[in-house]
Length: 440
Image: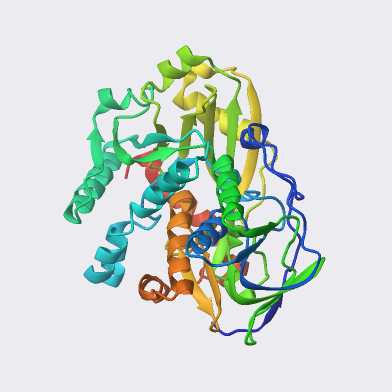
């Protein structure tokens, strides 16, 4: 991708305060970090204090680099502080997709990466003593025999590459994870898990600062110049000149770099939190304490919080707009899974965007010689962003092996470009939703 100058087309939607989520209401204390004021020269500048940016910055700080992070709102303001909190190993595009499209060598390369993101998270939590309610195990729920066949095929394929963390569940064992009659079985990933996502982001930010890094909040990048010897980032209050620039805005990067904007599409998903259910009811509904997602194209995902609330998410809105009534949209799905919770009070409901790539393969790459980017995790960003942050840090530190392999994979634009990507995706979702209903 060629270097050049680009500017932000629109400001952040929803202001700079955290979304009115359960996570924001239960966040660990964090300092207010001052906005950038004036001109400065830095070694490495990371745009975006979500998981991709924080992971990259923390890995670089651990290697001895001086890193400055610019965040348009607050640390974890975007998807990293709003998501379902599930550590789902792997990438949205399945291992079979990589093998079919790119061959055996790429499939083996990707297989070696599938568990790394979750391992990085667990290492960060332990090393920096991050309090984020980390728990182990995530479960994929099947509503019909086709779903079970697909899960079994995934387990068998992963086993071919030496990955033995997946185990099938029959109907009875599935009820240990979700006390509902909706599912005919499922599969547990023993290396998955769940956590408080905003507290993870806040803990990683604190670790960066502990290692000498700097974070500026309320500092959106309004333009970047990537064509010169050193990238230049302009903000409302100052200018940063960097030796290396890393763009980690993902679904909230806007048109800061038009060449990146056309590669992805923002998609909103919604989450809500019930009133506290009490320990007894929480254990009765989800005895094993894992998190669950079903395997439909438009899926439900849920888990219990540390204070015994059901956190329930699902649905998508292509283009990244928020539905008018989040609670109404999600309550019907929750009641379908757990009719025992009908008429339960909902205390929090919120929405946020993730970045979807057309192929569901996340992308990383370089603009010119000294500007890097990563985005497009397509709903698998909790683990994927931590993995890609490490790979970006390796490249910046001088080891381009894994970076070049992934950056060399071809990407495809959405059919019809940015103007048609939303209706195209809506039509596709209707088709796949119909297949799910028919069990085809």
